[in-house]
Amino acid sequence: MAPAALKKRFFGINRLDPVGATMDFSQIMTELVQHFTANVDSNVTIKVDIEVDNDIGFHPKTVQIVKENARTLGFTEAQFDE
Image 1 (cartoon, one colour):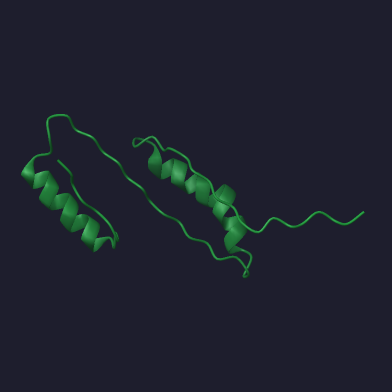
Image 2 (cartoon, rainbow, N blue to C red):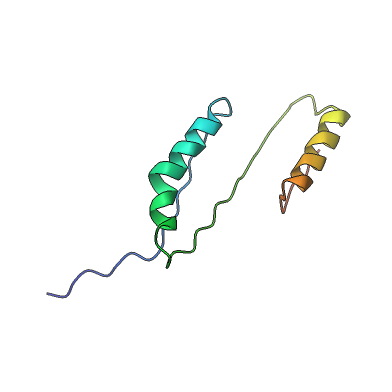
């Protein structure tokens, strides 16, 4: 019987509570990502996807600060919709 083919790709999605996201993300790094980064043959990509809805709308100062911070942090996409 032929051996089973090796798995070649992993992906996972997890919703983090904004209050505990720092601890949750740290745990993800420790318990998942480090196992991939320890293997030099693995190409690891981590993406951060943030969605925020506000029924009354965001204060203009919040929009300005978030846009500037996202740009400084290197977000490739960060925008507000109406």
